[in-house]
Image 1 (cartoon, rainbow, N blue to C red):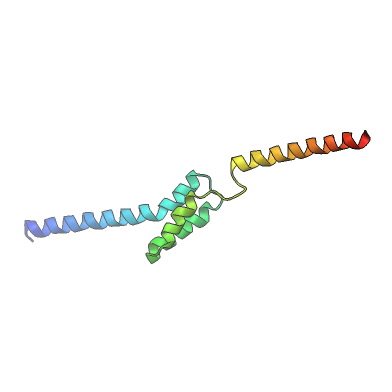
Image 2: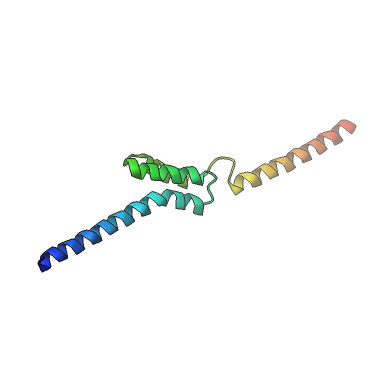
Length: 102
């Protein structure tokens, strides 16, 4: 084997290793984003990300968008708003009870 043959094999091995690393990185990216953001469906997003990489389809892009989305009713602002609504409803009931007694 000549020097150029060995050099070509080394370059091909490096390209193969980088390709495998890139596939693993892209496949795990949606799941990692979802876990980092505390998404309740992180496992499903992780599975969809891998399915998208394996099938070379658009589902990988759907998984990325899904990982960045916030489900309704699950955010901290929604919980604070729900608590505020309950407090206002109880105040309203107290005021209506005072009007009925008058």
